[in-house]
Amino acid sequence: MTSPILVTGGTGTLGRHVVPLLREAGRDVRVLSRRSREAVDGIEYVTGDLLKNEGIEAAVGGAETVVHLAGGAKGDDEAARNLARAASRAGVRHLVFISVIGADRVPLAWLKTQLEAERAVIDSGVPWTILRAAQFHDLVLKVVGSMAKLPVVPKPGGLRFQPVDARDVAARLAGLALGAPSGRVPDLAGPKVYGLDELVRGHLGARGKRRPMMPVRIPGKAGRAYRAGDNLSLDGADHGTRTWEDFLDERLGRATPAPAPSPGLSHVDR
Image 1 (tube, rainbow, N blue to C red):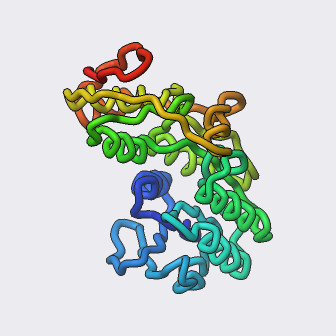
Image 2 (image 1 turned 90 degrees about the vertical axis):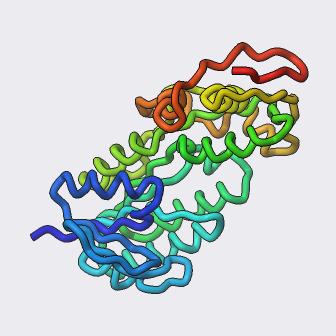
Image 3 (image 1 turned 60 degrees about the vertical axis):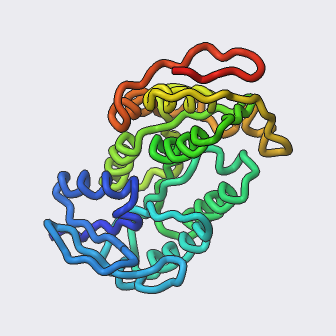
């Protein structure tokens, strides 16, 4: 009998795709959750809280592989440290972690916590695999959806993204979890690079709406990092298969290609 694979964040955006893939591969899965749930179809749920350091020992016990997907608005570094310490004590043989492209290059507090979380995994003494991925389509949809509600949509100059589909990331992670520890593997980004204004235009086009757009400039070190493309992975990365347009087609209906940008205040009418 093989040991279960522990997945943190198994009910989240990424985890709900990773867990079924591990089950399809014939592996039993244990999910660490803050809420009590009944076991179903080879999936066991263990109640615990990574930030509060509660229930982690029971969750990692008997698991040879741990896939750490859980994340939040803050405290990801502390959560990773708590998990890594417990995994080391339990004799876990493979710790898989999902991080973010640009964690070591873009000077934002949240990305700093991702880098610290990576260090916790690396320093744990447990053989590890770390995959850095671009922003998920789901997250980008939330951001541009909020922006599209404004009477005038800001258009940050030079701000580009390579959004990736969560299912593409899940497939890669499941394969990594079923394999041997690999260290830092190639980044995983989406198949296309978009300006933020293009992402907004695609969303508005799928909604059949229009908004005026005003150019703005992101100041400071973060702005310089984004304009330099430090949040992108243009060389040496792997790429998913589903584009932003594919995602919008699926979620919202037909996505209209973005019109060519024009200087100054312009209407987004597609």
